Image (cartoon, rainbow, N blue to C red):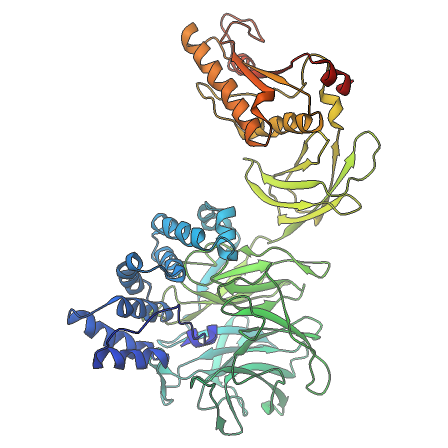
Amino acid sequence: MKKLYILIITLTLGMSTTFAQSALEKKADKYYNRLEYVKAAKTYEKIVANGDANQHVYENLANAYYNMFNAKEAVKYYEKAVDKTDNSEIYYRYAQMLKAVGKYDESIPWMEKFTKMNPADHRAIKFRENPNYLPKILDRGKDKFVVNEMQNVNTEYIDYGARVINDKLYFVSARNTSSKDYGWDDQPFLDIYQADYIDGIVSNIEKLPGKVNTKYHDGSFAFTPDGKTMYFTRDNYYDKNYKTDTTGISRLKLFSAQLKNNKWVNIKELPFNNNNYSVGHPAVSPDGKKLYFASDMPGTLGQSDIWVVDIKKNNKFGKPTNLGPNINTEGRENFPYISSKGDLYFSSDGHLGLGGLDVFACKNVDGKFSRPRNLGVPLNSGKDDFGFSIDDDTKNGFTSSNRNSTRIGDDNIFTVQNIKPICDVLISTQVIDAKTNKPIEGASVTLTDKEGNPIKTKLTDNEGNADFLIECGKDVIAEGRMDEYENNKVNVAGTTDEEVKVAIKLNPIEKIITPRELVLNPIYFDFDKWNIRSDAAFELDKVVEAMKKYEDLKINIVSHTDRRGSDKYNMSLSEKRAKSTLEYIVSKGIDASRLSSEGKGETEPAVKCTRCSKEQHQLNRRSEFLIIQEEKAVESAE
């Protein structure tokens, strides 16, 4: 049922139903299209048992279990569906469910297939930038959070979305068994509850007094800072009228309520609601001036996005604004929460995660949200994790998850203790001319990790600046590049400071050219290898820039080995190294006719030694770049 509160998305996934259907299949499709997934799954299962299942049945059955978050059964039927479909969203969902059951390695090929089919999709871009992200997420939060189930609050039904204000615990629950069951998952409709909450002890649980709860779904709420106004999510039910969209689905809407004499009354519908799209999951900024929410309204980038709107007086609001592609993806972004520091937390299955919804954090730096960061295990799991909140002062909060549910898809409330800070660092780089100390506009700055893997690339503005937000304590390298300049990079040590300023000085390209050769940092190779390493590529790009600037320049590449191995083998190895170096430069757009290469084996060591050390061997494995003496090229360099 909480799946309803991940916003009702009528996603067809491009399925075709032009084939002849049995009466049983039509019945199953009717349940499916009405979002009655429990009944739909049972009916599709009968078709499978009868041996009459087709591609349409397998896809709908898998999707039904996906929407109920029965990952085990979803995997079972996606496995039958993926080989005969060209629908990339099926591949994505299959990968998500494989991760949800812990089959991380098996999920990778399906993410790769999804990425190949949708190269411009934000989910694909994020995966392509960081395909080996899973170990980092699994390790990231281990020493930052303590997560415990609230067994004195949770029931056998759905419970989620806890918040504390003025010694009162508020949460959403389906525990009212006298309520009608909802077809999505055959559980009672949701209501908002409250309880006394003093020193972590819960007592006197009761339905929220007043007029907020109805016979339909009510839940996902937020309070203004003074605690006197509540914004909450409800089915499209107001003044005893239950409304649906053109497909017969009741969309979610946001309402407000006022606290009067300890009761929540004066229910009002917010003006940007609409019968044809959903609006829900409210969160209020610390100053009470902005309302964040999730919606699939026009302008949404994916299945549901995080939006923000200005709160004005007398139940008036500004125009909703999408938080943009830094936050939102083609997937589902929901359950925003704004901390007292203005940091944004939300749940998503579109950013890189562990399978279901994961909780992400974006630090507020000067009014801008940093890049979303998965908060890792144990806060997140392979299941759905959502409804996160945290008190910035006490470091205590709540989250919700179906990780330990007694029934498939059920959600429970967990307490959260943040024992180590979560933060980002603003890396402020400036690229300047080393000769004139003037800023360089349009230079490319790439931030990489210690292994040389790119994190993000930006172009400098007219002041030579490019800013990056990264995780605290992370060692990075800032690389600067510009046409007609020598590349340069600066190591930036990990820190918890809010901002680090980094100057990247670039020398004009003439400085590396002498009448005899191009003077570079050594181009090294690994033992018995001839592939171009990332540190070597950085230096070789300087050769490329020099040859682009001086079109008459011709270079002879000479490669050397250490003395290990036979003379014949080392000569062959050095020739391979020289050739691979030449091929790299050609791949960057330099005509091959301007390059030549030769191997010297071990005949001309940089360091003469009999019992060479590891470092001496490394110095001997190198390449040199000799200028072929053509008068015009040398004069240009001089």
